Length: 333
Ligand code: TYM
Image (cartoon, rainbow, N blue to C red; front, side, top):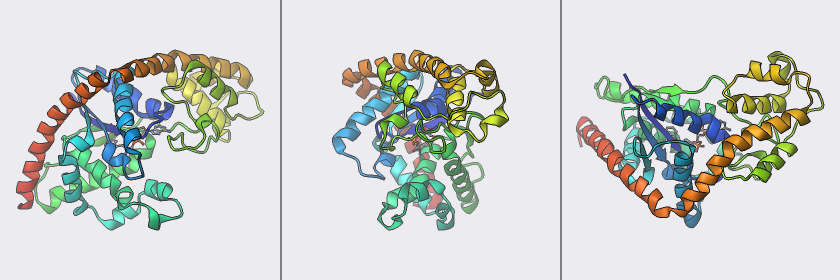
């Protein structure tokens, strides 16, 4: 039987190689397996948990759709839609926030990282954001959720919320318990400037990430400037453990060439970084430039992108509003 796939990406600009290798590449693979039903969501309600300029947000929503399509997601076969257009998401998030427990949310490490030292000033939305994520997933009877490693804890919370709702209201199986799909390797791509920090849209240094809209010169320059260490490349995985930058760069190479760490290490064992970096730049350019050029082409076709979202909205809204109706009945509204 096919899988019911749901995943989301925030339209906060600077979609990067981490988003691509950790998530979008997997979306494309799943969308190519014909038996799967896939729903991909541009999660703008999640984006406003931190300040967004309205004009940038509007552009970034279209850019995220363009990135999906340019990477190989077929908008005819799958649902691509915008979270805020389907009101069931906000509504269900409220209901589920009455099911989720404070103690569960207090454990979320991403909130702690994002809120930083001044938790008092973080938005309430940033705190309750994993509940909205649970609503996204559960509304579509999702069986599998492809995400990067940083979303693992949020998915565990989603499973707990689903189970508690089913138990509290004695509706076994009403919410399907979703499985995370997190790749064993390369599910956490690190910053090019610091191999112990996640590659992130919000890093102030653009040199820390490869953006999906970068051109060839930018990619080559960023890899040239990427942090390394003075040793030649090692001959086994163990030797990579204390070398986070080397491990990250070889991991990126392995993922882009659909290989694994071991094979990629063997390929470059004993060589120096400059030779390896030339090869890495080349595979990055081969993979990212066609996507980058396609994104730029699609961004000119605003009408086409809006049409994709409208189509997606109609399909998603049908599924989600049916589920919300049932939730109302169960609760006693
Ligand atoms: P977001 O927008 O931060 O990231 C989108 C996807 O990219 C993955 N990712 C990474 N993977 C590997 N290495 C990295 N450095 C890296 N950075 C980001 C993320 O794991 C994610 O899969 N809360 C989610 C969006 C969301 C969602 C959902 C996901 C909302 N509702 C329902 C799945 C199901 C988020 O902020 O992703």
